[in-house]
Amino acid sequence: MRTIYSKKHILHNSLTELSGGKLIKPLESPDRIKIILKEISNRKLGPISEPTKQNLDVIYKVHSKNYVKFLETAWHEWIKEGFQGEAIPTVWPSRSMNSKIIPVNIEGKLGYYCLANETSISKGTIEGAYESVKVVLTAADMLHKEKSIFALCRPPGHHASKDQYGGYCFFNNIAIAAERFIERGAKKIFILDIDFHHGNGTQEIFYKRADVFFASLHGDPMHAFPHFLGHADERGAEDGVGFNLNNPMPSNTTYLKWKKSLKKVLSEAENFKPDFLLVSLGVDTFENDPISFFKLKSDDYLDVGRIISSLNFPTLFVMEGGYSMNEIGLNTV
Image (cartoon, rainbow, N blue to C red; front, side):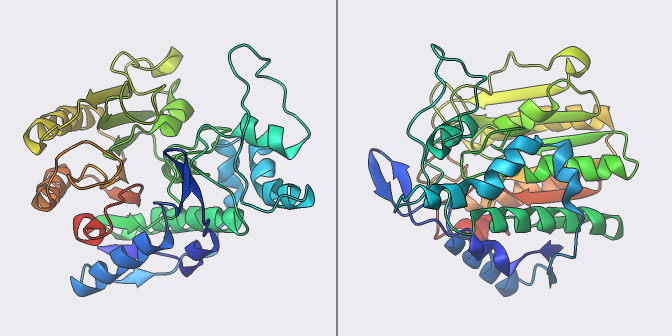
């Protein structure tokens, strides 16, 4: 399997994450990609290619222009205000406030456009985020020559909604890839999200559409991030009714139980008959992951791969989460 990867992911290299009331080194770090790349080489998964030059206008089919402009200018505005640390929001438009107002001051803008403040913006964040989009678009362009291909994206993307960032995500890479396929003639796309955390951004982007079926297996949002989306009764709206399928699962879910949900979801994919299958590949379902509560083991991921590949759809894998550093390479490959 070919991997698309950019060395420029390192441009997004924030030093701080708010976790448990403390500022810590971010769990989503360049080390994740280094470990995965090493395992790809050691196990001879296949060739590794750099992203090609891309027209990025497709981003605007997924994200609002105001949001993209905010990401492009946020760091400069933050520094201009004289702040010394990385950009982390401190205020949000709560239910008791007017949530339609976009403040002029950068502190207010951060709160308006951020959905979770574990994710800091630093020098190079926007450049790294654009590079991640180039990776996924290059992979999408090359898929017609491959049965499957791996977009080793960083930063990840599935938590980014039309106009909000968070969960380590800025641009929704997999949603942008779906739009690229549709631009080039695809009629139906099936997105399978197997990250531990619900892909709230991807759901929000396609919730009212029938051409993109979104299905997710994830930790119950009553107990897991992102908390406010990902419940089983969220089945789509308007034209999208019936094309959104959530499978929230409780703490200590074993692979046997998780696998039943996977097969249920993939039966929907078989019925949908998509032109392309897109997989949000998170390996934070692993038993030792620091921010999840599922109990999958390393050998289980081989079986997951076999089950997905048995569908025989052209498949784009897009890297999302996974934070158990000792095993992330093994589990991903």
